Image 1 (spheres, rainbow, N blue to C red):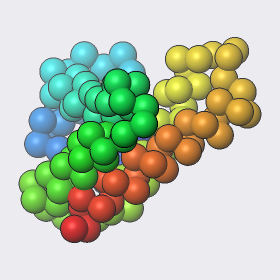
Image 2: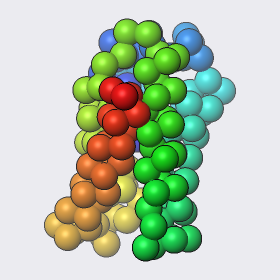
Image 3: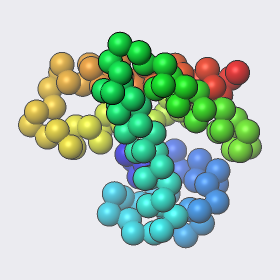
Image 4: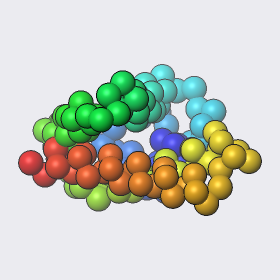
Length: 131
């Protein structure tokens, strides 16, 4: 997911100090640069935390919302030069990652569900970022 994001938006590489040794235009998911691996793992952990929070309390998604808002707020405070559209730019790389993982199980319904999940995440990321 993160490599696709960098391929699509190479100008955003400069926002990540840990990526100084990574070519944003050619990086792929097999990249073994420690900085790239660390950032990619952090991004995936956010989605994992949200899914875990919803699975643990399906009737109460507040923990997931709080986590996303905290991530948005952290980006506002620590990433100078960032604007909220950069979160939206992660949608297609996220969907591509899901498609790669699910392979032949990825269909129109799965895509719709994961797009809704991403939009849920985006809503609360932006609340934290813009708040």
